[in-house]
Image (tube, rainbow, N blue to C red):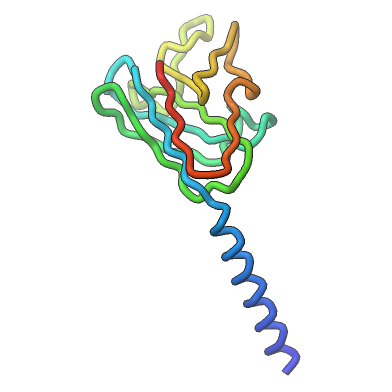
Length: 140
């Protein structure tokens, strides 16, 4: 009898967590426009902390490009503070190509159209709060 009671309690707790979480999950739609071409793919990262920004993605997606624009959708994202970055992998080699000085040769960008000065954009400039479904437009 004790085992049955434990199983029932565990099931009730798990069901409660699912109901609680489903109320706070959102969709983030990322629209990217102004790309140099329609070649290659978009490599898009969603970051959930300043510590991991541009290093360790919370979620990632690969987007197709048509008419120099692309879109990716991140689903089931909880409330929080996030930032997005992307690179236009024009030659489909899976990485950002740079010149001999380390300057990117392919398009890239961040949420809030954050730009870096003598380096990558900063978390503070790219972050946004997620409380509802959100559309993030990045214009090059």
